[in-house]
Image 1: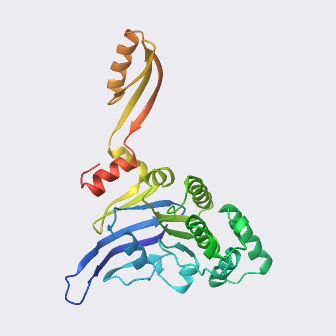
Image 2: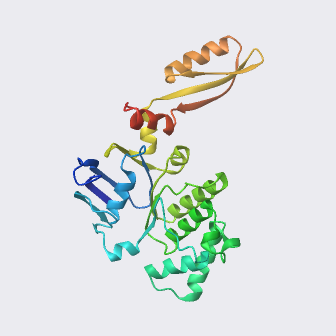
Image 3: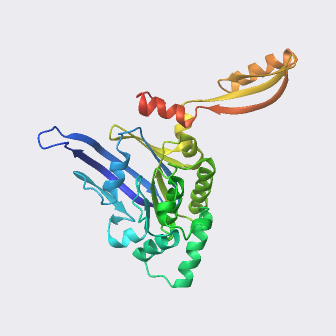
Length: 292
C-alpha cells in the first residue's frame, strides 16, 4: 500500500513579470510504500524541496497531484503526517518542552500525563533532556535540528517527511538520528527524507527516488540501483609476507584467480562482494548524466 502517491507534478516560476518561466518540476511521479524508508536524492536545484512543498500544500503546482493515504491532502491526513522542512521556523521564546506541547496540541487532544511522558521520551531520544527548559534561542543549530525531529515525531505519525534532517548535526547526532529513523520504521511508520549525505542514505534507505533537472530518473530498491553498476568479487590474500587484494569480474573469473593464487602458494584470507557506492553511482547518473 502506498501512503504517498505523487503523479506528474509540474511547477514553474518567474523571477519577475517579464522574465521567462523557469520549469522546476517537469512531471515528477513516485510513491512511498507503507513501512519503508525512502531516500529522496538530487543535486542542488533538482527540485526536491519544491516537490515537497507542492506535495504538502505549501506551494501550488501548475499541474499534477499528490495523494496521502489514498486521498488528496486534507486536515485529517495532515494529522497523520510528520514534517520537518529544510529551514524550519522556531518560536525562540519557547522552551523545548513548551515547543513540543504546542505542536502536539495542533494535531490532537492529549491528556497531560500522557503528553508529558511522550515529550520526556522524545527529548531523551534526541539527547535534549538537559536543555528541555531552556529557550530555543539558546539552542545551537544541531540542537534546533534535533528538537525539530522531535516535533515531527510528537504525534506518532504514520508517514514522516524530512527535508535534510542531518543538516547541522555532528557525527554523534547523525548516528542518533539514524537510529531514531530505523527504530521508527520498525514500528511500521513510513519515512521519506532527503539528504546530501549519501553514505547515510545508502545505509538507511530500502528505496530511492532520484531527481535530475525536475524529472524522476530512478525510483526503486536501493540494492537494485547499486547492483546496476555491476558486482565484482574482491579476493584478499597473503603472498610474500604482504597482504594483497585483487578483483574478479564473475564466478568463473574467481575460480581462475583462486587457482592461480593457490598455485603460487598464496594464502587466501577472504572473498567479498564489491560494488560501487551510492555516492559513485549518484555522481554518474544525477550530476554527470551517465547510466550507472
